[in-house]
Amino acid sequence: MAIAGMQHYQAPLGNVSWQTSSKKLHCTLSHDIPLYGTATFTQTAGHKLEFRLTVKQQASRTNDIAHLRALPPAWKHQVSVVDLGEVPVHKGDTPFQLQESLSRRMLAELQKGMFPTFSYRDWADARDQVTIALPGINIKPALDEFITCLTNLPVYKFADFKDSLLHFAFGKSTLSKKDRKRLDELVRYIKTDPQLKYINITGHTDSIGQRRSNDVLSQQRSQAVKNYLIAKGVPPQLFKLKALGERRPMASNRTDEGRAQNRRVMIKLVK
Image (cartoon, helix red, strand yellow):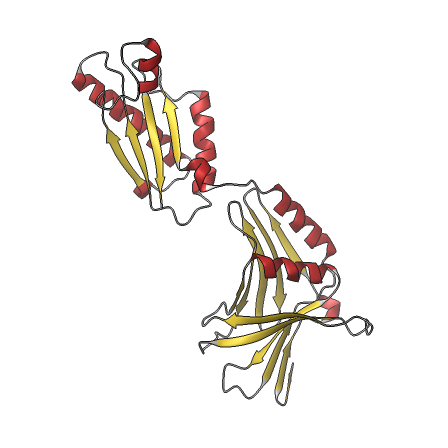
């Protein structure tokens, strides 16, 4: 709807729809704004909640500022406006990108039935005041599902996955059930971290046998780990493999316990 000097975008109250997508590692709550774009709350395992507003007509100026307020609906005259502050406008098709604290505040206002509203000067010639409202109605079922999805997201931390150590039976390069479980957890983390640059995989053996044979065995162990991760969807270009055979023991090769520690593969994630 456009009035002289003012442009207001909002879904008709009789046609407000909020949609939720709940997956094991990703949660999304979205709302389409007719003629304007799509508002989306999203969180992926290992990351924080964020909000973005994607528009049909790109923002064309830099260093713009918009005002964000939570307005009560017309039928709640006694409720006060909540000023949520100023937010930066990013040039391009996603001008509004909010971090966790403000995203959670917006969700809380929507849950109370408020209408979080962005206002700014239009990007054409700044003559019109533009407002975009997210209506806090018809949202409860989708919001309940979204919050449940957020609660069930696994918590992944880089420190928990940056170094992984797998051990092997004597003369073998076969992954154990315990190894596969650890690698499955590693895959789930890798898929949530876009900052990951590469994965170092280094194979080792104990000192039993000929050095050349141990070099081959350590290579087979590294390759077995790489093959498993690729089969689970990790991009092949991320891998850097090494095979050090018996040359870098982590324990004494004079005892069974030490040799068992030396039959290993080290996986290191690098950002």
